[in-house]
Length: 83
Length: 134
Image 1 (tube, each protein chain N blue to C red):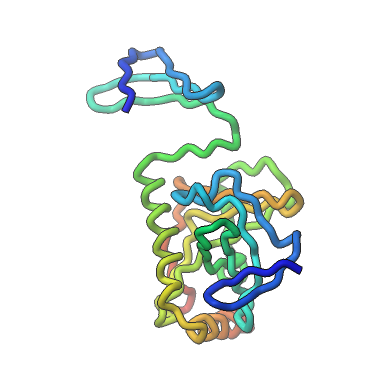
Image 2: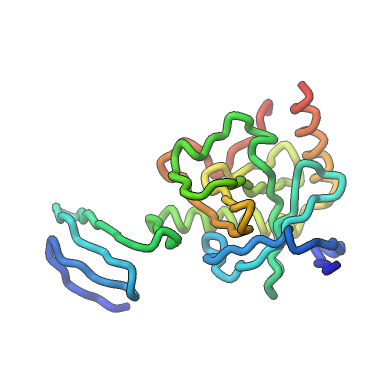
């Protein structure tokens, strides 16, 4: 891991297009300003991990699923739509 | 017509059914190209299956088929038109325990067929929303 020290108002650059500025520091908290191309996704790490796990779980669970469970689910959705 | 095997079954598809994810799905950076095929006898559900080696596959659905009031555009700025949403379904062997990820929908540009999974971090939508009327 690369470790850099920065002060308030200073920036780092990742690649050619991603800029991260330290906006303010107070106690244990840091506010960062991030400039990046619009197609770059930026997430808080804990949210990224949460979605990653949800994706993995949704995928893994399919190993054990029979087609009949999907048919039952589908029938339920179609019935509730009609009501 | 090309075809793909998903859970042991063969599905043929056409070019228009291929979605390109330039970043992959969240936490799955290698899922760059996927094909969207209807699940047989399981309307309105689809398979979203990776065309890369790993053969990841998901059950997805247009969220409005199940949650008519779902409105992610309240929480995200959409700078492209003609977009459609899909959400990932976590199927349970007891179908009533199935949950749906409304917090991280997949956005697809209907024209370019480019897709991205986004996080509605500021929204009340849940990662594991249960089926309505349950």
